[in-house]
Amino acid sequence: MSTPRNTARATAGGPSSRGTSTAGRTARLIGRRLLGLVVSLLVASIIIFALLSLLPGDVAQVMLGSNADPKMAAQLREQLGLDDPLLVRYWHWLSGLLTGDLGTSVLSGQEIAPQIAERLAVTGWLVLLAVLIALLLCIPMGVHAAIHRRDVRGFLTSALAQFFMSVPAFLAGLLLILLFAIELRWLPAGAYVPLRENPGEWIRHLILPALALALVQAAVMSRYVRSAFIDVLTDDYLRTARAAGWTLRGALRRHGRRNASISLVTVLGLEISSMLVGAIVVEQVFVVPGLGSFLLDAVTSRDIPVVADVVMVLVALVLLISFLSDVVTVSLDPRLRVVKEASK
Image (tube, rainbow, N blue to C red; front, side, top):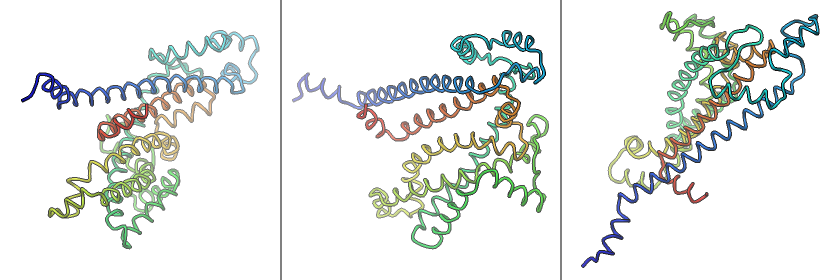
């Protein structure tokens, strides 16, 4: 016969309590990750501002030319706030970042925020298309290499992935232009057509740069997919499923996909960050007016406010992607909540 104490104890340890405890652990983990994201952004802003402030040269002198009157240069420095103390200048820049007021370009006089938003949309579409291509390539390659890891088919697939891992993105872009644009004449070699003007030409002009950006990352991710599926293939639950009558492919689809996806999500966050950085080079090769080409143009013309804002936006995107990757990974694998809680 159960007593009230036993009933209360059973109720406290029931499914509802466990669900609340699990949700609480997840919320605490996300909260700590969010706090780490904020701290990382603050540290990154300090480092970026300090490094750019230490660069040699005078922005006012660059704007007015090498033969400018020193008095005019001094007036311009005062107008731009370049004579203010370093901490004051940092606070003005940081407060502008927080409010969305990124200032104006010292060379063109245009507001920086609308230009970054326009260029970021171009880079965003390029990276998104590259991610889709990379996933379409890496998952079949990785699964095929894992299933046939003991025969020549798996060896050739792994060798192909290793080859593409060694090819730089700019070289892949030049080879793709040579093959598909010059020899076969299937796709345009460069330039960019806005989506709102002609969607068909927009996608045609993005295919080659996205493919150049995706090939290396697909090869890297296929190695992780291969390792993840090899681990799944050797697990006891897959042997049990095979013994119950499942085919290998059916057992992998039904039981192995979720476990293998955890490793893929983790590495996908890293590879998207790599694609953002790689887009800087690819956009130059294919003459795509994205955020990378905007940054390189600002560096060439020594437009320091634009450089600072664009670098900060790129760093913020990389950190945000890493944060989202952690959140998704913890959501997919509840065991990580217990491990991370125990490591506090």
